[in-house]
Image (tube, rainbow, N blue to C red; front, side):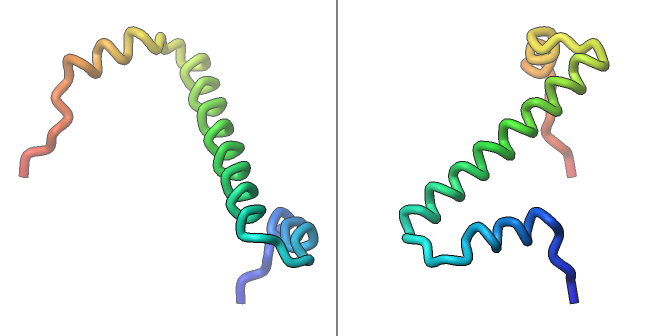
Length: 70
């Protein structure tokens, strides 16, 4: 059986009371926004560490052909 991690346990404690569907939708939206922001921050950090210039990369991608041939 899988053990819950600290984050999961804290969320369970927070929501031990019944939540409305509207509240659940809002909470889900907040979690998604938080995780999306975290991904962007990590990507920005990686780009900075590697010295990538976003505009240059996008221009290169525009010129690239990404389709795979089978």
